[in-house]
Image (cartoon, rainbow, N blue to C red; front, side, top):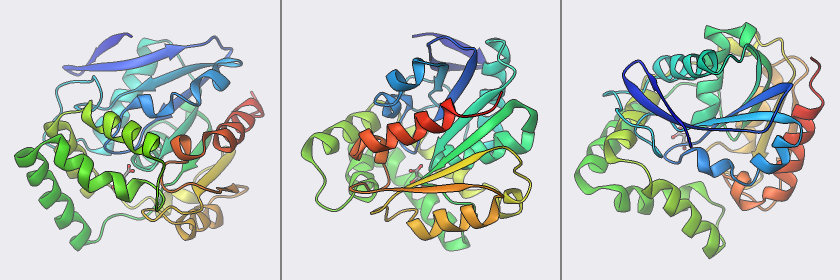
Length: 263
Ligand code: MLT
C-alpha cells in the first residue's frame, strides 16, 4: 500500500476502486484505516475509496506532539490533492467524525456528503481533556498493550465476540505509543463542532451502534437535530464500532448512502 509524504510525515493510505466518485473513510482512535476492511469491498463496486492512517497510528509515521484536527485535516486535504481528487464523500467514525467536521470547515467544497458514525459534536470538558493528558502519559509509559486493555472494553458492546476483541487489539497494536498520545492530545483541544452543524449543507447520514457507550445514541440524535435533512440509523448488536461488531447492516447503510449521493 502506498505512502505519501505530507508536511514531513509519511502518510500511509489505501487507494482502491475506480470512480467516478470518491469516498474517504476516516478511522476511530486508537485504531487505523484497517478498521474499514469490512466496508471497502462494498464501496469499491461504485467508488474509488481512500483510507488514510493518521500520523503515528497504523503505518503512518512522525506524529506531532498533538495530532490536532487542523493538522490531520490538512493531511487529508494534501493527500486528496496529491491524488487529484477534488470532491469526495467523507465518512468518519468517532475521532474520524471530529476530523470530518474539520475537513468540512476547512474545505466545504471538497465534501459531497457526510457520514458521521458513532461521533459527537461537543468539545471536551476540562476534566475530559485532563483525562486525555493522563492517558497520553500512561500510553507513553506503558505501551500499546496497556492502551488495548484500556480501550477495547470501552469500544465494544458488553460481552463482545472474542474474534472482534482480537481484531480490535490487533488494530490498536499496529500503532505507536507516540501516535496514541498525539491523538489524545489533539482530541483534547478539538473545537466544539456544535456551531458547525447548522453550516452543513451536504446530504448527511448519522449512524450509531445501539449499545455505544462512548458516544451513545443521544449524541447521534443531537447531530441529526442540528444538521438539516440528516438521517439517523441505529445499528443493533453493536457498541462504538458497528463497522466491526455488526458489519452487515452497517456496510449496507453506508454503501446505500454513498451510492445515492447526487453528483
Ligand atoms: C474514538 O473512538 O475515536 C474515540 O473514542 C474518540 C474519543 O476518545 O473521543
